[in-house]
Length: 510
Image (cartoon, rainbow, N blue to C red; front, side, top):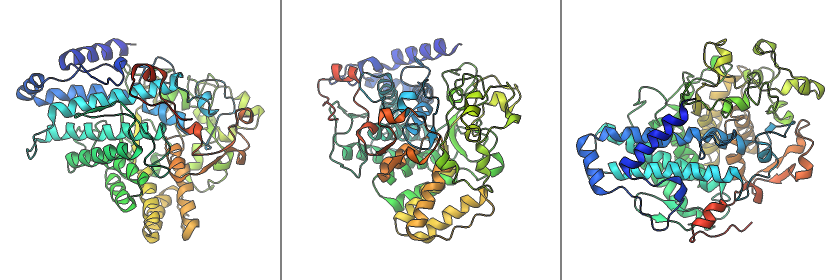
């Protein structure tokens, strides 16, 4: 695999040219690695577009992870989403003695564990890259910039907002629990605050960045010619999700609808494997190729039930919980996302374990590697990663409208998407019944897309795996059957190395 030489050479060259601090320094209280003004001026004078290579390189952290595939459960944002989904109730992991089993067992949060260190590194590496881009390109007050520079600035601000959004929600209870609680350190292009600032201060950074990022990107559409560049639609989606956490519901609905404008609902593609950015509903993602694939250390390795990876031939499948599956109507196209399908089993994978425990109807079909859907026409594990779909934003808008008091608008958004999933669908519910229906249908729609953990924490829900018959039998011994989304185990500890190297950071309380 050529990935390591290529990406590390690139990062080494970029670090030397731009004098950017490396991840091993963590959050330096007196940083010595900064971008000097002479370098900034030279780059800006010669060709600002040169910075795009650094934007692309720094954003690679969203895909490759904080430890660059040092382990097979560390592959960037998709790994974060899978790990956190597994901490909740909608994914059952009955044979839970492989990668991600500790997340599922609610036992992967301590500061000396690989998970906490990798995610911390990933997002702060990403933030460092964004800070460098902003430092290099940020105009003087009142000055205007060209479209190319505006796009790069918009990407940097929006990506930084996304990084802090995940950091604060992984390392603390949500905003509505206690905005004054200790959050995470904040590094931006102006200052390094190595201590843990309050949740509110972190959200001030998130919301400011998200608004600024969107403003720079607004009106520029898919500026990169494809969906790999963070566009105005992806920026709007990031902003909408953050606004939900601070209960700014009218504005959240507004930005969710701005995100929706970047795609179109197309139920005919829902069974294609979620492996291509050509999907009409996809608005942002990453195109994997033979040089950048992590192979077994990849999302599709863990979630494709029919491929050669961990979730396929190796035999450690993540399936839908019976409680959620039973609520999908027979007329709903999404029912086809689940249940063993021999037409997909091109490699004659054995499902003896599932057969012996009556689990075959819960086997996941939603994600299928492009190698399988093209009958071997694509290389293994080179499927595109979809970060964001407009379908999620329909449910964000519906919930936001409901919480803002506009039930009619909420019902319209719900019915508009659901009729594409189930032609017989027609919800007429009101009050709490309508709200619960919005939440349920979002759980089904975004199954294994990384939404459940954030939604459950924001709403303060109870995770109750006892409602399903197919969760692992080992969970009671971990006290991981019924617990609050505000349980202390839903929060990570500060990584041990950060505690050792950063004298200003406060210890965890739980």
